[in-house]
Image: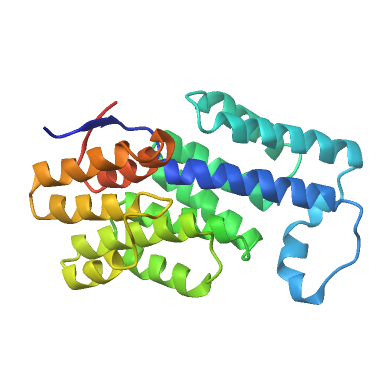
Length: 254
């Protein structure tokens, strides 16, 4: 029987955005008294100019607001998260983590155009933000622009050789789905070879499921998903399930 999952936002964006936002926000704010500039970071320094003019107290207030918004983004309290983000925007308009978080919030309510606009602004403000670029590429995936998503996911992997294993696997899994949608089954098979059933992530199982779904073999696909559910925690499985939902292979309950 075809499994049915509740659709919210692509959880990969929520999961990676919260990690990214919490890390980047704390890192930037902890360096608030460091006025030395690096000539190689001219774009980022210029983008964060308004942020750096804030007082220590306002920076601390901004940190708390963004931390609260990031915590809300994974739940069902998206309106509260957006309210926090709007409050933060009233304090600073050139802070990349703010717009990455804003993109995730709009993704939550499936307003992908506004989400993409926010991610594009975040990347413009901080071109070095790896996971923001992932989020921007994910917009092509959820909009089913598979040729562009395939190109950008491949580029993302080639430019980021030191990704955490779990993140690299998730990107490869999405790339595998893109190749299946583009009828490049041999490319998908090559990606599958990079996964193993003993991995700490369920990419091996969900990639097999995607390949079977693409062939119309629903029962076989579901058996792979069921196997993953017995090994991995629901939180990580849900992230992989979402890609199958976005691909149109799993139904969802609003």
